Length: 101
Image 1 (cartoon, one colour):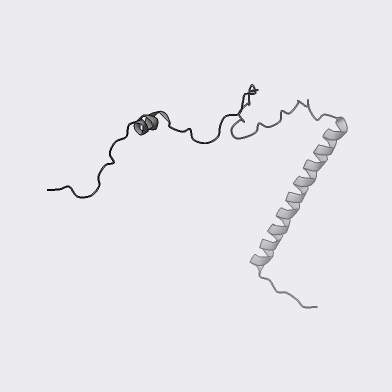
Image 2 (tube, rainbow, N blue to C red; image 1 turned 180 degrees about the horizontal axis):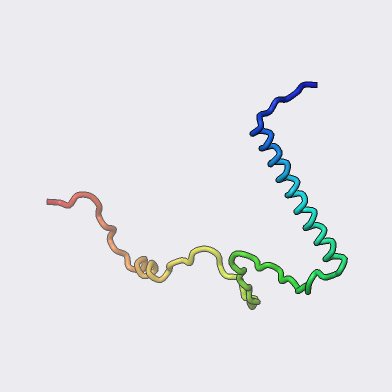
Protein backbone atom coordinates (compact mmCIF):
# COMPACT_ATOMS: atom_id res chain seq x y z
CA UNK A 1 0.00 0.00 0.00
CA UNK A 2 1.31 3.43 -0.92
CA UNK A 3 1.85 6.07 1.69
CA UNK A 4 0.70 9.67 1.17
CA UNK A 5 2.76 12.40 2.75
CA UNK A 6 0.93 15.56 3.75
CA UNK A 7 2.16 18.73 5.33
CA UNK A 8 0.85 19.87 8.73
CA UNK A 9 -1.26 22.60 7.08
CA UNK A 10 -2.92 20.11 4.75
CA UNK A 11 -3.65 17.78 7.65
CA UNK A 12 -5.25 20.62 9.63
CA UNK A 13 -7.34 21.65 6.59
CA UNK A 14 -8.59 18.09 6.17
CA UNK A 15 -9.43 17.85 9.88
CA UNK A 16 -11.39 21.11 9.68
CA UNK A 17 -13.22 19.93 6.58
CA UNK A 18 -14.29 16.61 8.07
CA UNK A 19 -15.19 18.22 11.40
CA UNK A 20 -17.44 20.73 9.61
CA UNK A 21 -19.13 17.85 7.75
CA UNK A 22 -19.71 16.05 11.06
CA UNK A 23 -21.21 19.22 12.57
CA UNK A 24 -23.49 19.72 9.58
CA UNK A 25 -24.66 16.09 9.75
CA UNK A 26 -25.29 16.44 13.50
CA UNK A 27 -27.45 19.54 12.95
CA UNK A 28 -29.43 17.68 10.28
CA UNK A 29 -29.98 14.75 12.66
CA UNK A 30 -31.18 17.12 15.39
CA UNK A 31 -33.66 18.82 13.07
CA UNK A 32 -35.02 15.45 11.91
CA UNK A 33 -35.43 14.31 15.52
CA UNK A 34 -37.37 17.47 16.37
CA UNK A 35 -39.64 16.89 13.38
CA UNK A 36 -40.30 13.32 14.55
CA UNK A 37 -41.15 14.57 18.04
CA UNK A 38 -43.64 17.07 16.62
CA UNK A 39 -45.28 14.39 14.49
CA UNK A 40 -45.60 12.04 17.46
CA UNK A 41 -47.24 14.76 19.58
CA UNK A 42 -49.58 15.72 16.77
CA UNK A 43 -48.61 19.34 17.29
CA UNK A 44 -48.38 20.35 13.66
CA UNK A 45 -50.32 23.53 14.28
CA UNK A 46 -53.70 24.66 13.07
CA UNK A 47 -53.98 23.80 9.46
CA UNK A 48 -55.78 26.53 7.60
CA UNK A 49 -57.25 26.06 4.20
CA UNK A 50 -54.69 27.07 1.68
CA UNK A 51 -56.21 29.14 -1.07
CA UNK A 52 -55.30 28.15 -4.60
CA UNK A 53 -52.74 30.54 -6.04
CA UNK A 54 -54.18 33.14 -8.36
CA UNK A 55 -53.62 32.65 -12.03
CA UNK A 56 -51.32 35.13 -13.68
CA UNK A 57 -52.11 37.27 -16.68
CA UNK A 58 -55.28 38.84 -17.98
CA UNK A 59 -58.63 37.48 -17.04
CA UNK A 60 -60.52 36.05 -20.02
CA UNK A 61 -63.33 38.16 -21.41
CA UNK A 62 -66.75 37.01 -20.34
CA UNK A 63 -68.84 36.14 -23.37
CA UNK A 64 -72.38 37.39 -23.00
CA UNK A 65 -75.21 35.32 -24.39
CA UNK A 66 -75.82 36.95 -27.77
CA UNK A 67 -79.28 36.78 -29.26
CA UNK A 68 -79.30 34.81 -32.50
CA UNK A 69 -79.68 37.13 -35.47
CA UNK A 70 -79.74 36.62 -39.20
CA UNK A 71 -76.26 36.17 -40.62
CA UNK A 72 -74.82 39.29 -42.20
CA UNK A 73 -73.57 39.51 -45.76
CA UNK A 74 -69.90 38.91 -46.15
CA UNK A 75 -67.45 41.23 -47.85
CA UNK A 76 -67.23 44.92 -48.45
CA UNK A 77 -70.50 46.75 -49.12
CA UNK A 78 -70.95 48.14 -52.62
CA UNK A 79 -71.09 51.90 -53.20
CA UNK A 80 -74.09 52.31 -55.45
CA UNK A 81 -75.47 55.78 -54.74
CA UNK A 82 -72.61 57.98 -55.93
CA UNK A 83 -71.73 55.97 -59.02
CA UNK A 84 -75.34 55.50 -60.12
CA UNK A 85 -75.80 59.26 -60.40
CA UNK A 86 -72.64 59.62 -62.47
CA UNK A 87 -73.54 56.80 -64.82
CA UNK A 88 -76.96 58.37 -65.44
CA UNK A 89 -75.30 61.53 -66.68
CA UNK A 90 -73.22 60.75 -69.72
CA UNK A 91 -70.27 63.06 -69.87
CA UNK A 92 -67.53 63.18 -72.38
CA UNK A 93 -64.51 61.29 -71.19
CA UNK A 94 -61.64 63.40 -70.02
CA UNK A 95 -58.88 63.78 -72.50
CA UNK A 96 -55.47 62.71 -71.54
CA UNK A 97 -52.17 63.81 -72.84
CA UNK A 98 -50.60 67.17 -73.65
CA UNK A 99 -52.60 70.32 -73.70
CA UNK A 100 -52.79 72.13 -77.03
CA UNK A 101 -50.87 75.40 -77.28
